[in-house]
Image 1 (cartoon, protein in one colour):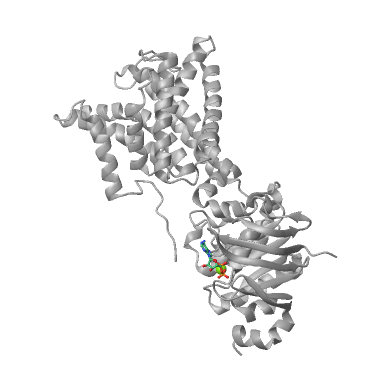
Image 2 (cartoon, rainbow over the protein chains, first blue to last red):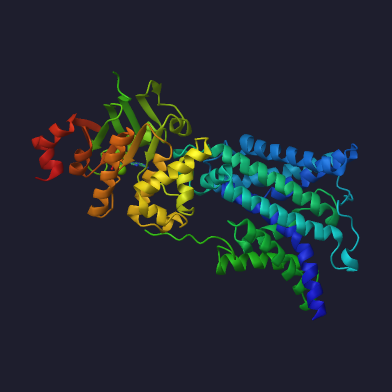
Length: 292
Length: 237
Ligand SMILES: Nc1ncnc2c1ncn2[C@@H]1O[C@H](COP(=O)(O)OP(=O)(O)O)[C@@H](O)[C@H]1O
Ligand SMILES: [Mg+2]
């Protein structure tokens, strides 16, 4: 019983990583209706920017905020320069561009900062929390930041006019234009916010998995799994999904002996397939009630 | 005095296939003009062309500004509110959120709250359902919501695309009474597109008859109502 509790705690700790990434995934999905396969590399690149700023001697929080700003601007720029022109192109063109973006960011990061593994500081420290070896102060901090981010997004989308406009632009672009919402800019804003949230995820993940250009590849898959499990339309669902993926992964690795470390990733993939087959809207995704 | 909306030689179509072949019509400030025509005549296309939702050629001047070539989002900012075919409800959002979206181009928060109350005064049934998801409303309620959303812009001109479509006669009557009241009390000009000619002619002062993308008859509503041909083909008496 105690082992179960400990493994759940450890699962929450890893789940925080996925939850944070899943949040970024949902953010962009809301804005553009696609999964962004380059999301992980964008987050990785942002983390390298933070790394570089600190290397130049900026204090942690200044580097953190500056990175968010740069990432936001970068996200907006990617939309304006790359995706706006192909807006009406078929989905496959988008997928190809996502993959190209992924490859470009990955190799550019490798070119500038090389592929050696780098350590990355944590603002919360790496001491074990309350003497427990299962969750460190950093991981607890991550859980906290993820939940804070969630509250921020909830308030933003529910209570601000620009949040309302963004939801309208995503749900029904034609009607949104007819009430004067500048739909194109709302999409760009969605990209900017997703990039900034991705940057937060990357910066928080890097102290755990270490910084290198490939750090996000499997994490993005877990993030997708979390987002799909929780429901791609729900930020709260994505966070819940992220934590659940972390917990399931840990429990399966501990209690089903054949799984062990190597088969953890397939579990995430199986989870994605299972959710898509049995409950495509996810745990908290919105099922549309509509009268015809 | 020049007209509020002046349309000259308006052409539009879909994927190279023309649907409008040079329309001329106009609308006086404070007036109600109706475009009548059977299904497929080009009524919806005309409204879409005026708001920049589809590519169009020709001249359309609203209060001295050329509409053709302008972005939809900017046309809205001139005070033109379009109640589109199919109602354009934001189905997954609440009723009140739909109304707030109608005022998206306005700044003053306090005024917006007051205007929401005013819409509820016009349509008390929306007040009862203010927190409900808009997609769960009945057809009539969604049409009222669409009109309410348009009013939230404080429009100078409303474009109404078959507001009677698919609704029970009683609901239609109620809706047209409210539209008439809005036109008289708040001086909102209206361009009303309808298949239901007798209904439209009861509200409008000027009417144009559209057939396959061309205007075939026009005149004061009272006169069109008496027109022998129109009566036979559109009014059925
Ligand atoms: N989205 C569209 N794509 C292609 N053709 C269209 C589209 N909408 C309307 N049309 C065509 O344009 C013509 C005018 O249609 P429309 O303006 O919708 O007529 P109305 O509103 O008077 O019923 C019709 O021939 C119709 O088939
Ligand atoms: Mg029509």
